[in-house]
Structure formats: structure tokens, C-alpha cells
Amino acid sequence: MQSGYVIPSSILDWPGNGDTSLGVSFHLAPFVDINSNNIYEPHLGDYPDIRGDMASYVILNDDSIHTESNGNSLGVEVHIMIYQYASTDFLNNTTFLNFRVFNRGIHSYNNFKVAMYVDADLGYYGDDFVGCDSSKNFYSQSVFNCNQVTSGIFENEISSINLQPNPSNGIFSISSTEMDLHNMNVSVTDALGKAVDFDSIQTGEKITINLSDKAGLFFIELTIDNKPRRTKVWIVN
Image (tube, rainbow, N blue to C red):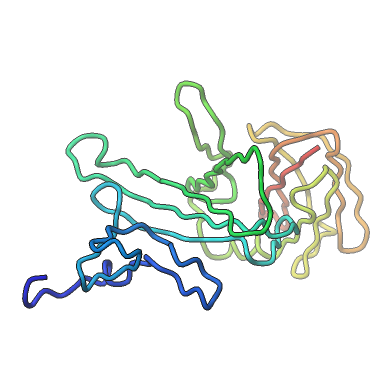
């Protein structure tokens, strides 16, 4: 190492090894091991083994409470390298992701398959949907013309609406602790913006909507005092 050289923090803090006393695996992010002792020692010349010209490394696992699925932990640890190339062609605007999945649990899994969902936000996040196109691979489309509203009152009003369960089997309820739902008009549209017929029942401060004969993504528009509020629900049958 040259005299006066200061190791950059991006190299010094690279998570090459984990603290096994905390239950973390010893081998983590890949690195060039100059002396082949499996210990990340940047002061001895070791450095991150990255893809591309610039990269970030993310490590995550599912050792926590699964509030969305209420399922059990799989004991899976995922390593993600996000990297880019510096070039003068299309690669300069391309981001690559490399995934490595490790089984840190006690169970074996067969026929393991992985899928990735991209939650794209086009303008206002509450009125978008995504899909696939055989010629374009992927698209994101905004359904309602309210993309200019990205913060402030509109978002606060959305957050005050409670829609449960979501995802739903088609029967779900809408309630709010801050708004009077008795004078509210409700409309439902599908992902293409087409109006959908539905049944609804209001009991007290709760409205129950029945879309049990439908499936997919639907947008719920609630109009109170001539002010529309929109939210969305996934229906899985």
C-alpha cells in the first residue's frame, strides 16, 4: 500500500465478513482476498469484488414478523448487487441487479422459484398500475388524471381512509375516523378506467362493498363535499 494512502470508506466498510456472535454468517459480500485467508482485510490490500464500474450491495432477510402475509420465516437471506457501467452507449443508462439467495434456515426447499415485482410510481402513486407487453416487456400507466397531486391534503385524506382487507376476496369495508361517510358517493373502476357495478351496504361508520365476482386491481373513488379521494384494492379469487 502506498505511503499516505487513505482507504475510502466504501472499501473500508465493505461487509465482507459478518459477526457470527450475532448469528450472522461469516461470509457475506464478495471481495478479492489477496492472501486467501477468507478474512476481509482492506488494510492488507483486500477490496470489494464488484460487477460493473460502480455498485451498491444490499443484504436482507426475512427473520422478522411478516405483517403482510402473516406467514412464518423461511430463513432466507438475499444478497443484491446493484451495478452500472460507465459507457457512451445505452449501457450508461442501464442498471443491473444480481441476486444471490442463501438458505440460512433449518429446512430444505425444492423447486425454488423467484419472481420480482416492480412498484413503479408514475406521478401520484395512488393511481398507477403495471403490466406486461410482449414487445415492450413492461409498462406503467396512470389511470386517473391527478398526477399533479403528490403531497399535502390529498395524501392526508387518503391516509385517513381505512380499507380492509386488502388484498381481498371481493368483500371489503371502508371506514374513517376523520370523515363522515354518510354523505359519501362511491364509485369503482377497473385498471383500465372502466366503471364497475357493485353492491354496497352502509352500517354505522362503515361501508361494505361486494365485488366478489371480480378479480384484479380496482380503484375506489370516494367523493365527500365534492372532493374526490381515491384508493385501490386488489381482489384475488
